[in-house]
Length: 472
Figure (cartoon, rainbow, N blue to C red):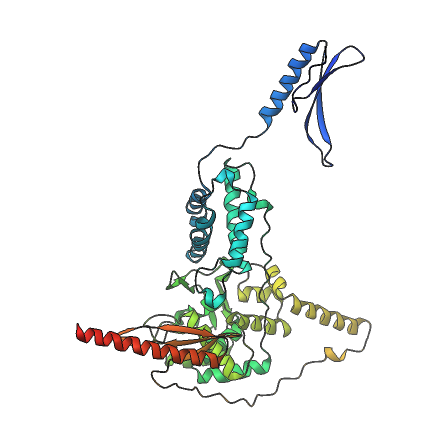
């Protein structure tokens, strides 16, 4: 009679030379992929079968089993956001999360059962976002989302799934094996001394001098600068208190708490800046240091300031920089003129000096090299390098402010909103309300042509509406 074979995976039984029966089964694999086994010994075959079965049952009972739940990934994501995430984040961050969760993630993969969601599902979702996930203005920005937006969607999914694992709803996080796009910080640009002079000269012509001057001498974030009130400044001591910021949340201009605890800080302004601000206050009938020119008792809109800066930079002949680059300009100048990193970190409101060192490593490296050269000169009596000599004070620029070009009524307006992007806008009044429409182009000439066509079309449309109103 042939030997009875056990089923595959149930282990094996054989008779040893000492007369005992041995049962053996594979319980896993080691790091090299080789099988790991356990064995049992008995005097009879039947007893060995019973021991081997008990071993198999103990191993199977110890292995975790996939939880049984009918919840979809979308339902879990919504529950996680409302109960765990939303109570701990600011209103501005809430809008960012809700945009990712309810506009992108749930509509795409929210229907998949939570326990059946795989790394492949998530990876394909990220690819679709990158290729054609943009919902608003794809003709302006392109069909796909940015690497940064795709990565934030991945981080949101991973964090929510980590919570599901900790609550026993999943055995492992499928997002852990996914690869999100690499993101790179935007290149920092710093204005030169001459560019700063031209910028401030042109700013006087555009009624933005005090705002940009204060930015270049304090390095405040744009929202912090626009939220300043006259009560925040003590003209006797020169102390300026930063204790709020302006943000646009769900389409509304909102005053909120600063970004972090370290963002609530005090800055001492030099006397020349105080004199300029004193003169400015005499002509300002608002509690806001930089009030909106259109709305009563309201700070300036951050978007409007960005557009104004773009116009000033162009007319001043400066390179196109972001408003945040003015903050970088202040920090770079402060370090180059000998301010220590700890003091600068407190002024610009970083959480720690390590953050400042990371952001401005290129400046601090130069400072260390300069310090090493000075030590070498003092100890080894070495001759100073030509580059280590004291820099000459920059000459006063001869730049003259460019006078603004006022367009004729009914011709709209054109402004540059990016390095290679122009915006044309026409907003006639209809029944006492503005009806605004925009066009976009990659050159000023192309934008003017598109705007002229838009104006003709809108005039025909308005004429038809007026004729229809008269007939009615």
